Length: 256
Image 1 (tube, rainbow, N blue to C red):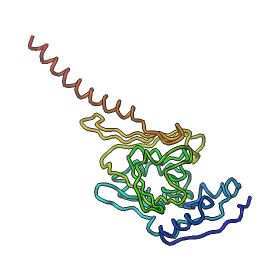
Image 2 (image 1 turned 90 degrees about the horizontal axis):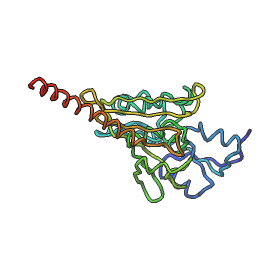
Image 3 (image 1 turned 180 degrees about the vertical axis):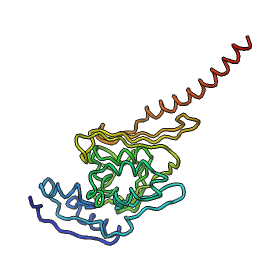
Image 4 (image 1 turned 90 degrees about the vertical axis):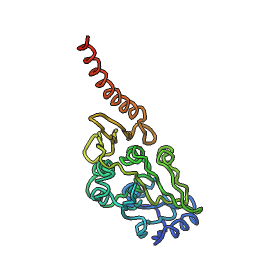
């Protein structure tokens, strides 16, 4: 099908984009990579009067190492995230989950910010942002604000973004040296997740010292599996303690 008629603007700055959204109100839609929005437009499930294309805003692209964290521009493609050395070294879980998204064509066009702003509970990267305590930077008519991931995802396809807001950047604390894995279950290759698990762990002395676990498509938003994290830590702590107790007990028995 052919989309309904709409106007189109491609601003060169965040401020211009916010202004365009503010003027159009709820009749406007933002387009980033387009892999989610374009099918909806073609099916006429949405008929905005204005599309605001963020592709011309250079500020929204790129990855920066900021010392204690890695900052990813909202318009950075999946392709660039997967291959970035800072991401691979310090936020490996993000790269691992991004590699499972759709196919190569989508990964060249799709963006991290577009995925998070779309907030599909079956999307793979929301659980990663939640598990890794990411912060999301939002620009709006009143300026910029930073929202922790747990406060960003509100419900099905619903986030803390207002009508005139733009997601500009996602900031991840560094997890250098942590083990991580994204396990995805789907009906067919390249399909949306039926369910998936994002996990990162810090190991000391062969036991889990810290754990971060996020769940995909198990609710209306990504879920942080806090109980699993606490149990993983408690189990590792008990194992270390139990090992010491058994050694002490054996020495006591020999002394008798």
